[in-house]
Length: 241
Image 1 (cartoon, rainbow, N blue to C red):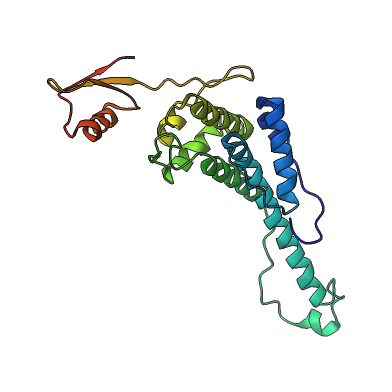
Image 2 (tube, rainbow, N blue to C red; image 1 turned 30 degrees about the vertical axis):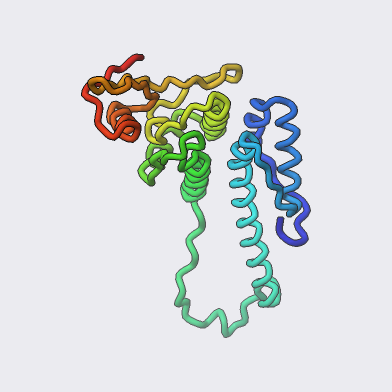
């Protein structure tokens, strides 16, 4: 929180986050939020609280930057003596050299808002799986897919889907999907249904070597996992579901 600032904006989208949490977790998240805005630098090892707070924190930081920009403008105006004085006759007769600043259009404002939503969703999804500590393949191209999803779903809905999915992965100790795969197959949920993992299972075989079953998105990923396990690529891969 900036100096001398004793309030902040809470958004309706946050309600979806609190609603999906058990009462005890919702209370912990609320305490974490107020501790954060009061500059107490809260730290928690609770993954659900950390994941749920990511989008809230991004909104608070975005609003703080706007506030600081406003304060800087007010400070500069104060240095100039407040509002500009009425033009003198000399001022009125001088040639006008600088082009007037073009007012911000509604489309510009909408574009900024869309960009903020895309960035918030992009940052929410982890770069590494917290179960297997491997990359989720996040890249800037994923932002284009997010823009497309925002035409079909609300910003709050996508945030809720990601939060529920990550919490479910943590609960079931299931590895986090590649981000592109997740965006291409966004889970269809309602307010009372938890996200279900539908990751394919692949049975990998190599002669008399142990047969292993891996849960991953593609056959190529299963092949690499078997290689990491046994040092050879499987001769046969069967998709089980």
